Length: 420
Image (tube, rainbow, N blue to C red):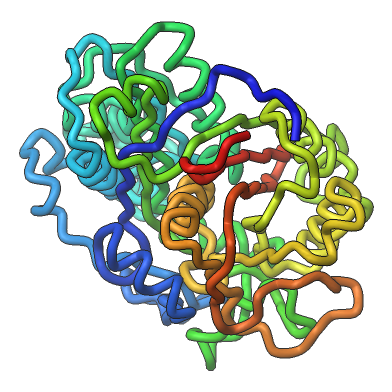
């Protein structure tokens, strides 16, 4: 354990709209119990598709309570609801112009954009579309920054506002941007949000085309099987999570209830392939090593790794190799699990949902499991916390992610009572 950077943050509020029932408490209840929310798609008829399973949120728009978003895409509503829960949870009363917002999303307003295209093109029959058929909110659906605006409006935040779209690492990368913003702009708080609502015919078709998603349609509750020998791809999900970041001394001075400390966040790119990954996991290992260095942690300080764990053959091998390289001998004794086994892969949202899960694990001193793990894969030979969670000493954790295009990210968090 070495000297850490002074530019850390206290996480004082957590919000989660995850597959299954709404809210942070329901999210924790689901993942700590090892239950799954993966089901047959209900939002449209999935019969024509290869993969017909997903993890859908039981989401009620009226919980957002903002008429300005009545015509907004589902992703805007999910993001706003998660942010509102996190802000209320923090109990913070801050100057409006000193509240920053950073939102991450991989695919933006997919549902509404697809719906509008179907409308203006006569269900794809016309190359030259009829703009007169477009709805009043088409511009908002086209511009991903509408999601960040929705969060800022909901919170009344008038400070810096950013949008991050780094594919599937977007939900982790907002942590780095939020940490930088908190200190660079001397803000009272930054609300970081990851949100995506990609369960739509166009998204399902895209992943069908490259056979990245599970075709285990007869057993959707067990379709997501990260690290298991018989895994056959990821299960698409949706959702949003939000974290309220404050400077540690400010949070402590107001006696805030601190979930965890955000120590550092780092990223790398593999500059290799759009969807392919090298089996040695070198770039992800470099991201993990960089975040350890930036946070003042040694490999032996890590008590848990929150895995990307998508359930594809190449990702799980790649990630296992990366953790072995980064943590060395300590990898063998470090628990590692994937919440995608329970709530699917919500693209740009999942990283922040995973950070919310880490903050809750640090609070409860409990490690959630990898559900559906039944048959070991000789190429994935670490401790993936199969099937059931476990009580454990959890002081410092690393959450990692990979994204199409070669994005590799890692974030380090620590228990508030543990001195780095």
